[in-house]
Structures are given as C-alpha cells and as structure tokens.
Image (cartoon, rainbow, N blue to C red; front, side, top):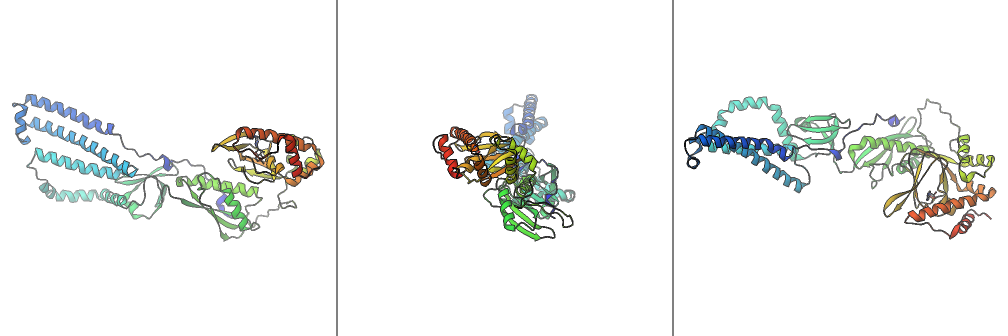
Length: 497
Ligand code: CMP
C-alpha cells in the first residue's frame, strides 16, 4: 500500500519567499560614523591651524608633505573620512539606480566589491597626494612574500569569493528561489561574498559556502515559475483509472496554491500488490509552500474518495469484510439519519415510516472546509440536508462574493434547482468539515405523491429564498410570478396532479 496517506508530519511554519527580507543598513546609519569622524577631524584641523606658525593661505601653496605633522595628520584624517562619505553616498546612488532599472536589490557581493574597489582607489589617491614618495608598485612587489602567506591563509576565503563572483556571473538562482543544494532545501535569502543564506522549511537559517555551492549540483525552483509537484496515492483495483482520474482532478480544482490554469495530471504509476498506485502532478503558485500544499492535496483526495464511495486499499493480508447495500453504496447509519431528517422543518408532516423510507434513499457525503458543494449555474437534480457542520450560501455581486446565509445542522439547500429544474442559483460552500445528506428527485417525487402538503411548505421556503436572492444577487432566477406560479411549476416538474 502507498504510504502517502500516513499522517503528515507536524505542520511546519517557515518564512515564504514573499517575506524574504534583505537587510541593508540604511544610508543614515551608514553615514553616522564617517560624519562624526569628519566633524572630529575638521575641529582638530582647525585647532592645528590655529597653532601652526603660518596662515592657512600659505599652506595651500605648499605640498602637504611640507606641512607640520599635526596639520598633515588632521588633514589626512579629514580627507579619509570625507572620502568614506563620498564612497557611501555614490554607492547608494549607484545601487538605487540598479534597483530602479532591474527591479530587484543588487546582490550584497556586488555591493561589497564596489565598496572595496572604491575605498581602495580613494585611499590610494589620498595617500599618494599626501605622501608622493610612497611607491605602491614597489610596496606590492616588495610584499610578494607577505602575499603568499596571506594567500595561503585566505585560501578558503578567496575560494568563496571567486565562487561567489562566478555565481553572480552565471546567475543560476536568485533571492526568493527555492533551491536544493547538497542535503539542504530552502528559500534563498541572500548571496554574499562568502556564502548563500538559505531559510529551510523548518525556519532554520543555513549558510552554504559559495565554494560548496559551485561544487554541488543544484536544483533550482525559480520564483514565479510554474513549478510542479508529484503526490502519490493508492486506489483499489475495483475503481477504474478513468474514474479515479476524474475524482482526483475535481478534488484539486480549488485547492489553495494550486495553479488553476494547469490541469493536474493523474498517472497510473504501478499495478501494485494490493492497490493501483497513482501519482498526481500539479503546479504550484508559490513553490516555497509545497509542504502545506502537498498535505492539502492529500486531504482533498481523501474527502473526494470518501464522497465518491471509493476506498484506499489495505494490505492484502488484512481481511476487510464490509457490508454493502444493493446499490453498491456503503450502508447508512439509519438511526442517525432518520433522527436528522426528523429535525428538518419541511419534513415535519412525514410519519416515522416515511422518514425511514426517505433515510434509505439518501446518500451521505463529507466535505472539507472551503470545498464547494454546489456551484451557481450548474444543473442540479438533488437537494441536501446539513447533517453535521455549517455551509455558507454565496452569490457573486458586482464581481465580489457575497454571503447570503449560513446554514446549520438540520437546514436544507439545493431545493430550488431540484424543484424547478432551473440552474443552481448560488454557490454553497462548506464553512467547516461538513457532512450532508443528498436527496434525489425520485425520493422527493415519492414523498410528494403521498404528502401533497409538502409542495406548499417547500414552495414557501423557495419563495422566501428567492426574495433574498432578488435583494442581494445580481442575477435573479427565472420565475413564474407569485407563489401560485411557483407551486404550479413545481407540480408540473414533478408531474403531480
Ligand atoms: P439551488 O438554486 O438549487 O442551489 C443553491 C442553493 O442556495 C439554493 O438552491 C437554495 O437552497 C440556497 N439559497 C439560495 N438563496 C438563498 C437564501 N437567500 N438563503 C438561504 N439559502 C439560499
């Protein structure tokens, strides 16, 4: 037997790709420290100037290396802090334009490299203007040994840096995509010069180093792409694959996060020992929520199977003896149903025997919260009684769903289409897990033949509900004028004299 219907693990909460936060300190914070340093060095420069033997104008004619040391150091500090401010402001401007053009935040690696190059250039220019004797070329070649030592020490770091650069050049994935790398699966939160930050579906943060990412094969489920999932389940050999396919497709029609415009594909995967093994392929809107969506898909398949009277097979060794009624449906718990039908106000005139007879002809269905029981505009040849649970009656008004009423245990619905032959006037949706009793045309006709008064009380309910529809719905059902016309149409439809 397929294990796909084993209890799903504890519900996990995780941050979805919609809520990925890319944290960059704002410009105000970035400028606070250099601004403070600028003020400090400006004051120090001012005081050094006061103490200097010559006036300021004379110093401007001299090269900085000829200035007094105090003046040199404070001017150097001032220039460096101003350079910091300039680099940060320019950086912010460049990445603001980048965001405007590309529509997404520049990767932090790009920001870091930009800042590194800009700072190095700024510092070199300033040092060169203060100390022209310094030869950066000689400094670099002279420090070859130091370079080797540093290179060895920073081997891993540099490896990550270069791997990060190639990741940015290749762009195999972006922030918000769901990726599988090695044993980790999660949503990409950021790509830095050292590592890729993933948020797993257990809401843990994993840093996978860039060099590891570049060595591993990566599975990418891009954000905004129609990514598919496979969910497997088993069905009994007594159910035809065509029927199973139909029931499962219908069950997935309105599942949250399942793409509506891609019809799910149901395939027979294997003719197993005790069941036909199937898989359903469906497409997701937000792939980061696939755990929850898989669970919901399995849940809906269970409910749809239950309503269709289909069974998940047990292993062959389990002797599962089940009594079935002549019509092939599972036997109905007669007493509970008779009791329920006796609480329905329109059935009040029925005798105990008539209620029992009616109970035998109803079928019981269970619906998941949010599932549509009746769709407005559909044909309908049966009515329903709420056995347990609650349903909402809704109509579309000016493009928006509007609730007309909430029906509870013992209330009935779907009588309008059944008694008039017109299309369904409203959507009826399960507000919680709801069991309904379905009563067909034949059963009602039999009741009408023996209880002509029933037509009157039903006609009255239909007239009241039509009044509600007229006030609230944009579309009002066809109707013959007045309750006399309605009664005549019901009698005609049921061929009652
Ligand atoms: P039917 O038209 O067959 O399918 C939709 C059902 O919604 C309809 O029958 C009624 O049973 C129910 N319905 C329609 N309007 C109302 C209303 N105003 N209040 C409660 N139920 C309603």
